[in-house]
Image (cartoon, rainbow, N blue to C red; front, side):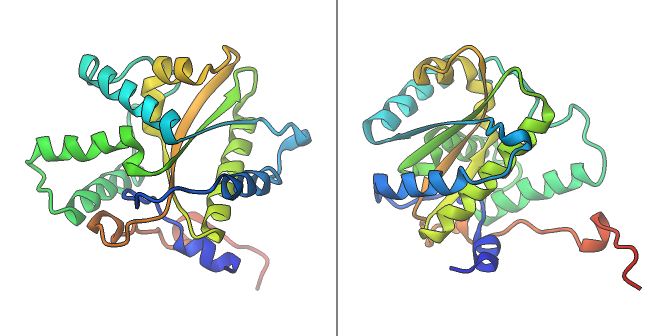
Amino acid sequence: MDFRHAVTSRYSCRAYLNKPVPRETVVSILQLAGQSPSGGNLQPWHVRVLTGSALEGLVTRIAQRAKESPEGEAQEYQVYPPRLEEPYRSRRFKCGEDLYAALGIPRDDRPARLEQFARNLAFFGAPVALFFAVDKRMDRNQWAHLGMFMQTLMLSAREHGLHTCPQESWAVWLPTVADYLDLPEELRLYCGMAMGYEDAGNPVNRWRTERAALAEWATLRGFE
């Protein structure tokens, strides 16, 4: 698979086949992602990977916690700014509307929307779950480096015929996830990620988010 196809075919997959991913494949993906750049070669990323019974155990525990605390638990950062301005507000709104439209869920069907959102807590049925953390002593520069690592990982997954879905929603389940993963106190959980083979027949996987035109976010000078 060439680089362009890896980039353009990557999307946030929200339905997976019940097909295990070999350990050697996961190791290969992680090792390639480890080649990502970081300032001063700090390599600030920390990853925890779950599959099989280890993954099932977390999903079960989170399902129970969700019954007790439907809004989640403590989190250490805001996924979105408290007041999104344009054009970001409209982009986020359209993303959500298009997702539910692909599933045929009307805007006023709140139970169905909540049910779909709850699938986040089961990694959308993916056979592999990854969690990403960064040392609390690191600043926003190192968070950017973690992001580069995750992007490399997602493109590496495409090379192996796999799809992924990064999930910042896991940030609101910090206490339970940190306890289950035995995450050291000095690490801050950033997000989770589902990984596996896509269920191409599921309608949720047939839509794609739109991208803004180049002129909206880039300027080029000196090429005349």
